[in-house]
Length: 337
Ligand SMILES: [Zn+2]
Figure 1 (cartoon, rainbow, N blue to C red):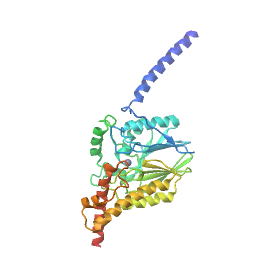
Figure 2 (cartoon, rainbow, N blue to C red):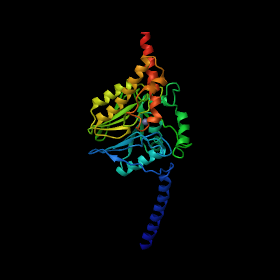
Figure 3 (cartoon, rainbow, N blue to C red):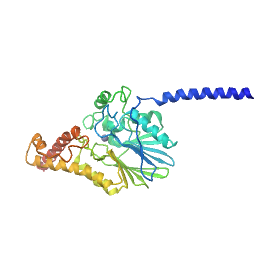
Figure 4 (tube, rainbow, N blue to C red):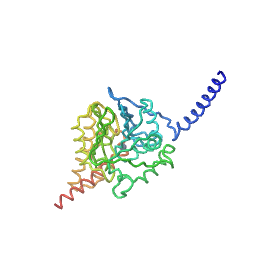
């Protein structure tokens, strides 16, 4: 008997050794981060989120510039956005495992832009989760003319800018399920409503409302205290402003934007994004109406209100130019009527 126990103990010991070495391998399927991912809990709700660094993705922030989060329900976990590298997606998955032993059922992508989707790979390869996105997400790979980011070009850029967290094995994982206008998921004791809100910041923008908590994951429709990126083909600031009105109508109790601070004051976060878009539009409207060329119009505009904000240097001029073109085009359309 004693010999049996000893043998069993030895076997168990070996098993745990095997397990330990497995764990080590499983611990590092992607390049490790040097800066750990921090998650915070929404007050009184089974919802957690991580807030990215301000600024654009680079080695200093290890690509951690966007927000993501997850909802733990009685029947599994729904994740909203997957962060900007497989390493970050993996780190998010480890945080989920700390919060619950329930399986990840869904990963919902707010839109197909690199800073939100490269982490999908970690979920695809290490969980049974289904990936959900708005149907225009397919533009990202297929439609070269209208995709708001060139998927392959962006991946090459990030392999340089974010190596080793984005490397030759990093790939864009397409959605398993897509929807057009609206999708309701009942998962255990929570209802998740997915709402198409694009084309605004990108062609496939969507938001997720979690009930009964009244928590809104707004994606990049709302960016709090950070200059949003608007300089791409599919940006429509007219639609974007309309989408912000829709967000406001939902009256969320807590808002987690795509970038910037989460807040119980949803109205303030919405107002920040709206005021910025409106400010740039007003300045550029004057320029287009007066036939002022872009460089002069940009130089004449007072940017002091925004110039010290994160991502101003990288995004503002391009945003203004994009809006200038959008307004010029809509004026041209009006002229033809
Ligand atoms: Zn983003």
